[in-house]
Length: 91
Image (cartoon, rainbow, N blue to C red):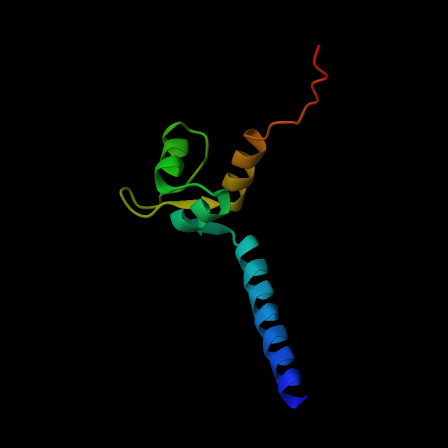
């Protein structure tokens, strides 16, 4: 019984830490390229294409340096690429 309680505590502790980390990541003001790719579910080529086509905003404080995406950049991209569902009755 003591082992079951210890396992339960360990699992509860791990889940709590993961939830805390998830909350922190979702509320970050700035994301790296890798974090933005993970949030959007795209690879590096796709994210670069979005940047080149002006579909997603980004910041590059030092020319040729690292690229960062704000939460607003990501939210705006998602809002602008959202398609409403529709129902087609057919003929």
